[in-house]
Image (cartoon, rainbow, N blue to C red; front, side):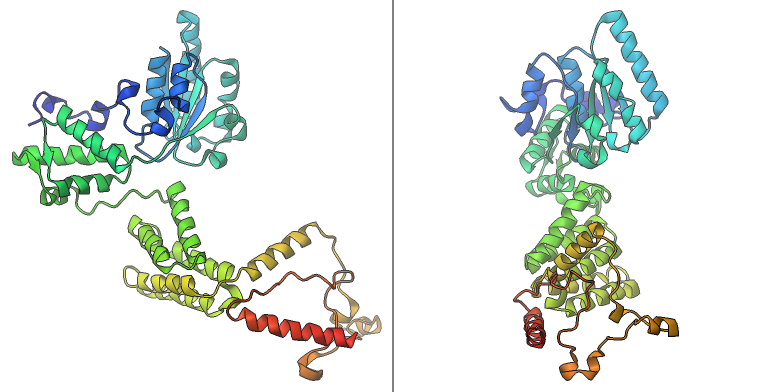
Length: 433
């Protein structure tokens, strides 16, 4: 099986199938289709610096190589994971040599560019500006946060997408026909193999390579679900704990809770647990949700969230994860209010820009004789000695801020009662004036 390729198995299948021309590229048609941005860039006759932002295994390196091929340019590749300042200097010297000896362009490709620090990224700037090389950076992280603004301003940003099931199916069929002597898959096995890749073409081909080797060893030409399970085991879906996939999913969980959809909230919670995120991190975020999106509309939400975190600490995984699920579902179903969150933000913003106002004398403590003689606390009214345990008309804010009202209870849950109470107390204030 696999005929002439048997002796070349040391080279990964993903590398053997790397596209050699633009029409060979599978996926990214929103960038490579007729009239689309990257197609126009290839056809322009003049390369430009760019950042290719997308998840792993979607063709970033391939596109950079094809760009160099299209413009007959020298191709220099660096990995920010393995390279340092010396490697950058060596790349600059090589680009200068190429320009001096052949007048050819150089394309410098930097994989995982977000892993370079600020000074390393800055090292590229003068050479991008001088035209010594065209810079192409690949990143799985949002370049707005991870790439220096100076470098970002000199490069176009193209967003690559995870490969669709159709893309992966086409890739699988192509690999089987061209490299694996027509190895075939049952419909169920094919679907499982595609699902295991989770939009990552390199992962699909690596899993396919492993499976093909096993099929060859067993001398079978058809792969079924049993063989696939034997080869791949319980391989987890792709889940980048430190990247955008992580933050996108926690955002989806939070928004599902805020949107009162318990099923969606449960789905995203389980997706993250299944992907390997730390349940303690999820517990902390759930506690935050209780404060930010529910608040005093249902104070039990915060207590249930804290209890869930404690249960997880006691039981661990998988038993403790059920408590997190219980908290997420409760929060999704609870009455919603962001009144505390908004009031806190407004208070923080006000204090940050306001002057340092003095504490009114009647609110000051007077532990010494001198302080008492100065009038500290003299006119303070003890609320418990007043009707309704409320000192109607009393002021507690610094002078000039008496009318500020940051906390505005919503008409949901317990905050309905809170709003009624505050309205009653303010009426007492009004009557006391």
